[in-house]
Length: 126
Image (cartoon, rainbow, N blue to C red; front, top):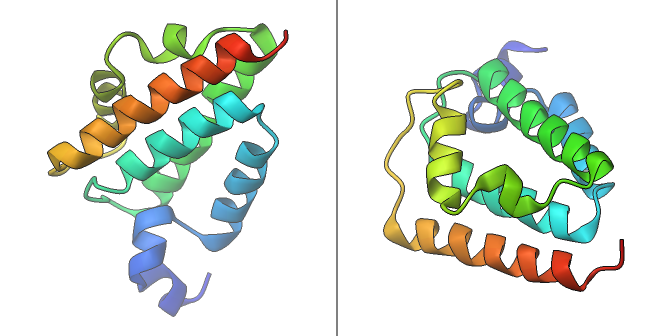
């Protein structure tokens, strides 16, 4: 990785581009309702202050791992995130970063997106 790529703002937020693209490819392969949930969590995670690109890349990869495993096991989204998706994400991110300020609007968007994904999950054939 070049010094420019290491020091750029984008690489600090998402990590190396190659890892980010691989992560996005994995998310794209998830069933629609799981993909909706992951994308909502991803948007929410973008509000946290990054510690470093590698830590953030690992965080997104672990998120993909979690939802891939849940999809293959048939675990519902609500079983993954619990009743409060904001609480789930904030606990999840503590393993990777010191966190940051998240506006109330972003919290509501996350909660609403998980609710929509849950509805899609109930309507989807198994």
